[in-house]
Each structure stands twice: as structure tokens, then as C-alpha cells.
Length: 189
Image 1 (cartoon, rainbow, N blue to C red):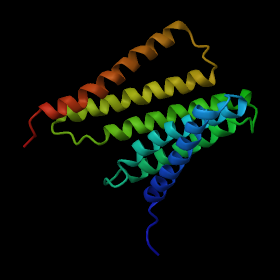
Image 2: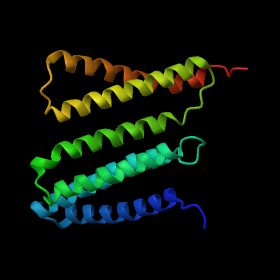
Image 3: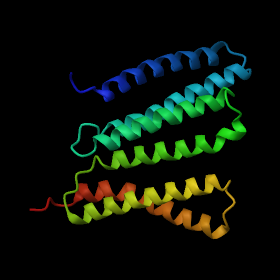
Image 4: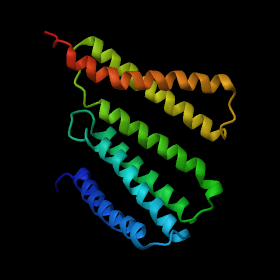
């Protein structure tokens, strides 16, 4: 029995879901009356698109040595994020109980996708390697702080949010600077 290619099934399902949601979205914009059902369908389409991007980003490292498990976790988190979002959009479970879960899954799926894209970088020098590690640490700190804040219903003090802003800036700086630094540096011997 061969190894199951989760990435292949994930990508095929993703394409079918995107096509169906695109058709639904187009029909709603052309002939819909934007009632409650149409709004829910549009949010569902948005969820399919958003979580397709996070899952696809996570899948980019699936075939790289040592990253397969991380990629599978990212794809799984994206699917779970999508499902909890859909459950909330369609009022299957009271949104008052689900909003924190949805937000936590969004934070996790975006953070894992972000890190997965950074794992595309093959550092040429130790400087780039340390910049990459630092950026991943900052992404993780931002994610953990956002999750903590979500659990606490955003009732942290002002300094907490100032610190979150500092780490978010370092996250963005590393995300932009690390691939550029890798591109302009000479390969180590």
C-alpha cells in the first residue's frame, strides 16, 4: 500500500471548492438581492478563498525534507479554520460561543502559512539563517499574543498592545528583509 498523497487530494478539493464558490459569488453579485442567505454565501466564498490561501501556502513545503509534518499541520489547521468559520457563518452553533475559536483558528492558519512561505528561503549565510529564525520567533510571539488576547476578550492593558505592535513591526520587517538579504548576499563556502 502506497503513501497517501494528502497534498494532491487537498489541492484537488481546493480547486473544486474555489470554482464552486466563485460561481456562487458571481451569481449573487449579478442577480442576488443580498438577503441573509446571500450574505452568508458571500462570507462562505470569502472563507473558502482565505483558507485556500493559507492551506496552499502551507502546502508549498510539503515535499521539502523535514517540513512535511509542518505542512500537513498547516493544511489541517486551514481545514479546521474553514469548518469552524462555516459553522459560525451558518449559525450551526451560536456565534457568541464560536467567535473566539474561529479567531484562534484564523490566527493559527495565517501564522503557519506565513512561516511556511518563509521556509521557502534556503539561507545562503548565517546572517540570513538568524534573520529567518528571528522572524519566525516574532511571528510566533505575535500569534501567541493574539491568541492570549482573544481568549481574554481583548481586555489586556495598553502596554500589552504596544508590545504586540512592536513584535508585529519586527515580524513585518523580518518578512520583507530576510528574502532580500538572502538574495543580495554571497553564498557561504
